[in-house]
Image (cartoon, rainbow, N blue to C red; front, side, top):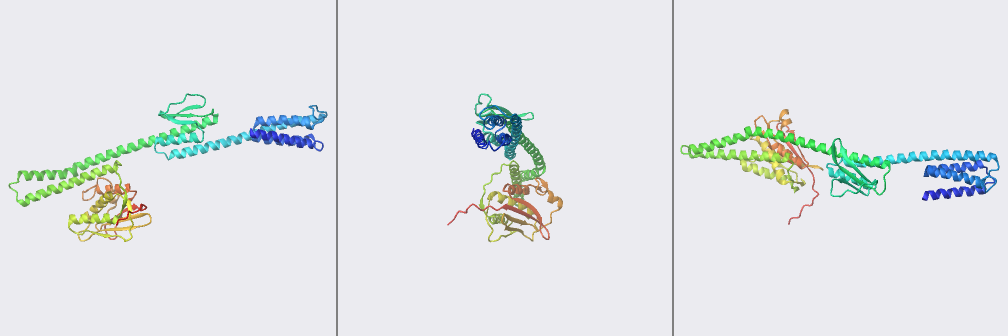
Length: 455
């Protein structure tokens, strides 16, 4: 309405100015001025306003600027030709101006639609569940398309009664239907707005299909991994679990059958064998359970500020109690920072790494635990001085149930790797200078949590 008033005021102003100059200018001069104004109105207000302005301009020229004045009679026939040409040119100019305005509006509308779809697609591409996709869709409809209501059926809300302002669209991709979009507006949508609404619904359906396919692929991988794990466990049961069970049963049977014929030292030896194999069996079953928890994603971290040096000290103390010898040397800088991790789990991971390293460490040398830090990570190196790991072993060393050249089934290293990666850290293998293998444990440096003061 404001623009129409401005156009009317402009027409009045031009007519007043022309009326003051009508003795100095010709009808052709007035026609050029009015044609320019009609073109401006066409560009700003469209076809109807331009044609109305052209008609009123024609009447103003005829009434105020053509002799005899203040009548619609034209005395000079030459003025008739000029006025007719004016009305034709004004009409064509109005059509062209309105067409350009319409094209500009359509281009602007397309750019607006593309911006909406770009934002919608960007948010949906990051979505990992259906609820996030639905929230992104309804948010765009409310904020950008000015929907009064927007939600997905079936839901807890009751659908409004259908009319020209309420739209129901299936969220369908292929043969799969993920729900129904209900969008209610205050006014009837234009054809372009309906097309944009349908495009938004299609984008949401495609995002839901992507999430559905990703879930199916993840479930398929989990089934394949579970099947592979089951096969590996059965293989382990067939050898590594049955071996200690056989030894325990044989030793217990000998104790029961030949107890009166065995000396005290022989009975003690059989009892120790039962105890040792039972411990071995318990550790193997514990490793299997830990591995299944890691692969099932059921590991819960209790991350607090801790010291890697304390973990290394606890591991060294356990090894000393087991062997009665100092098999480990520890080297940490005095300014080694703290970082946040689950103390018990990292202790288990480091124990597994050290147990593996000691198995191949020469009797005359010691395992080295060396700590260092940079701006982003803490590192702990477990340095072994035995044989260098072969290329084939290096490739499979941290895979579950891998058997090394000694026939030992590999569970400790995969468990350690899984624990460290659950802490967003990493574990890799390097060659020890001279001979041997060095495992490098790296954890992200996160010491922003204040350390409580202890008196």
